Amino acid sequence: ADRPDKQDFQEAEAFANRAKYKYDEMDYSEPKVPGSQPYREFAGMPVAPIANPASCFKCGTCATNCPVGAISKEDPTQTDALKCIDCMRCVQNCPSQGRALPQKVQEMLLTKLSPLVGVRKANEFFY
Ligand code: SF4
Ligand code: SF4
Image 1 (cartoon, rainbow, N blue to C red):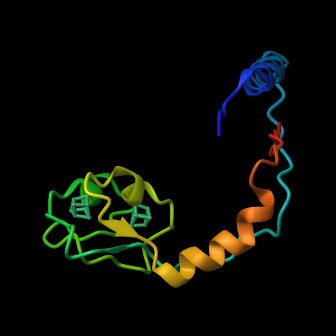
Image 2 (image 1 turned 180 degrees about the vertical axis):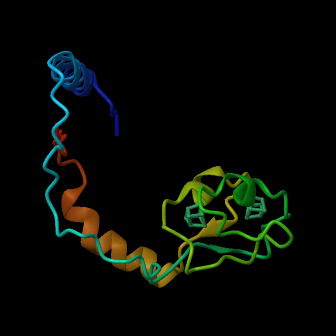
């Protein structure tokens, strides 16, 4: 909650200044980004949000705004779980709160993530 805040903006500005400095210096070196590389091939997420047929009135908002085209425009209650990246945009944008992760998954996530609620997540910058 309440992010981005003053500290985020200060850090983003410092990052922009570092990037400009690097550019001005004609330093075209690749930033070192942590993580295993090459990245694994995307094999789909284990679950995707589902539409509740009782509240979905097929306005198509979710399908239009899904960044990966995972929701059928003809029938927005149908989601291609192999394309979905679980960004939750459709859940947030649905005007009838008609989309959600399955109840059991929500409960599992709540248990897993609740220790992190209220903990400030630090930004990481790579340049
Ligand atoms: S945005 Fe909600 S109401 Fe509209 S089609 Fe999608 S699930 Fe149905
Ligand atoms: S969670 Fe994101 S990627 Fe998945 S169906 Fe919804 S909008 Fe598309």
